Image 1 (tube, rainbow, N blue to C red):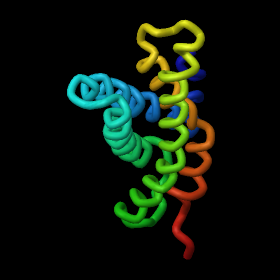
Image 2 (cartoon, rainbow, N blue to C red):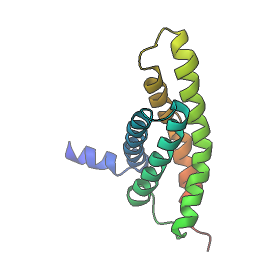
Image 3 (cartoon, rainbow, N blue to C red):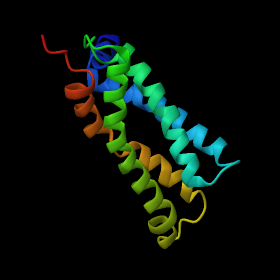
Image 4 (cartoon, rainbow, N blue to C red):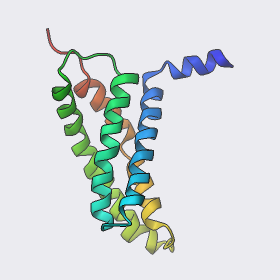
Length: 140
């Protein structure tokens, strides 16, 4: 059993998913807190930045091999990938919270449900973009 768990945790995508899950938790919890003092759309945006920075640190330490790039270069690449992912998160979150879920009769916690689904939506595309762009080995 422990060998199987160790083998599973040795897989980069699993470590990526765990790191992303922690970062998603930071994102979602900070959005809930921020929504107490600002509009939902602004809170989603700021919370995304908190989650993105958490994800960068965890993925740099736990998921991807050293790229040979400077930290600021790598973070800029990470941010560029996350601009694409953020557009997806924002559209999914807003679409679900304000349109689809209410149309389906889910009024209670529609913003939180929409945001959770939105945050989870770019996992596969983000993994490959980070693997082959953000954290790729610096060309010789």
